[in-house]
Image (cartoon, rainbow, N blue to C red; front, side):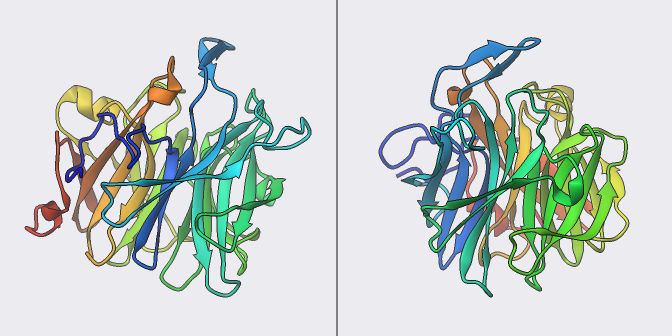
Length: 320
């Protein structure tokens, strides 16, 4: 069995097939990790100004107890053959994230729903009684009547949850508190990265501080990351700069990848994994994953390249 993370290399599941969980996020539930993401199996096709896409395939799920070896749990939110559906293959179904609601005892999936030309800019919601689905799709909307493209959700220690989404033509990131059932948003919201054109948000909390790592807007091509920090999700966010450390090429391209999620390692306080996608825009099914440990020092974080690594890096204090 695989014992180490090898960023950028082909990552196979327990059946020996490349993992298809792009733009994804991870849920830890009763000792098991569940990795949700976009299945990019299919033919990559060029369209509109040297851009590329595949027909939507659906949301896949993988399970693991060690974060390295993953079992394919199948498609938990499939596409629909109805042309009127948000989940039709011609639409955009991206960046699924799942959180668990203790009050309703349901797993809630949020995802980016869009038209092929990205003008619909909506957020979709689905629910299930099991982390591995099937998920019932409830529909999509614009949160607080605002555009929503790249997004993520974050569940805090007090069970309050938040939607973070690129809005205003991607110029500004919005944060909206979710309703108690996690199925909608309240009118409590703040604007972050105003006028900085940031997308692909990934959020985590450590020692009372909240961090958001993001990318710039360059389509499938990589660019420099930037992060902000705050003492409150609804508070004032301070721009801190680029979290990446290394060669100029590594720093300016985020190791040739784009952020998607920050994964807290269960049972290891202060241990966080930066999850990113290394997109292959002309063959999206062959896009790779870049997972790296995050170093934290107060309100400063650093992400450094490692050819291979394992969870022991969190035991010797090298990331604390």
